[in-house]
Amino acid sequence: MKALFIGGTGTISTAISRNILAQGWELYLLNRGSRNHLFSGKVTEIRGDINQEAEVAEKIRGLQFDVVADFITFGPAQIERDFRLFKDKTTQYIAISSASAYQKPLSDYRINESTPLTNPFWEYSRNKIACEQVLLTLYRDYGFPITIVRPSHTYDERSVPLGIHGKHGSWQVIKRFLEGKPVIIHGDGTSLWTITHTSDFAQGFTGLMGNIHAIGEAVQITSDETLTWNQIYETIARALGVPFKAVHIASEFLAQSGPYNFRGGLLGDKAHSMVFDTAKLKRLVPGFTAKVRFDQGIRETIAYVLSHKEQQKEDPEFDAWCDRVIAAQEKAVKEILHGPFQED
Image (cartoon, rainbow, N blue to C red):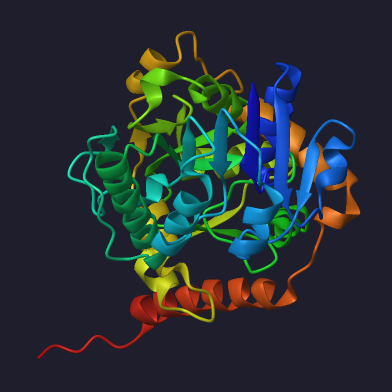
């Protein structure tokens, strides 16, 4: 079996690439080659920019694939480009959408593939919805053999799952833990969240590859484990071996407080409880079970981050912002408690 991955070395796709190589797939990677050393000698590299359509068309001339999976489509024009490139070159095209595309606010916290797609808070999610609409049209009108995959919050050894962080990723929050400083948790920390390890995601994804029953379908791939955000941050603190110190800040306040665009990521995603029904995935991929419990997976991630300096990119701007937000809330509480009370 032969697969072409567009991207193939990101958080989600690296685990899938490893998985299918172990299963004996012949894998081609179409990307700019910045992380292809992870699979040196095991994949066929096609160096290029997928946005350079004519150039890519020439490079894949004469090639046929059982599966083409594009991990970097973010708008309808990219889907239409892929259709032109691969409509006669694959028996299955897998597009990566997002669970953030589901209805916000949710009418029911339990989510399955029939949950409506609408998100007024986040342009990223609306673009993913638009991608899905184009894909379904191509399937209905032209028989393009699509499968839509909807991941939720997925992590690997390089990424610590958090509700909020700065532009340089999770390290500055980890550093606050290690320095004994309080970390910010959005809301009251009791909303439910689902986090999936990439090795589990890869198992589900690989089971959809070459699967005739997945053609024309949208499938969410997640763990069945749900935790509150308080539990997530407390588990991270335990993995670090430090006390759990948190300050809860309203999501609406965070979305309006400062240079970070938390409106989409919080109000359009993480501020809501997200519990996924994986029955459809298990029907399409018999035997699928997410095996990595969060407390186990996060210990491995923390160990990796602490032992790899390249993962420790400091973000003093975000750190100072956290201090200001916490101080602002503390000041407001003091003023309410100790300020003058005036009756009308």
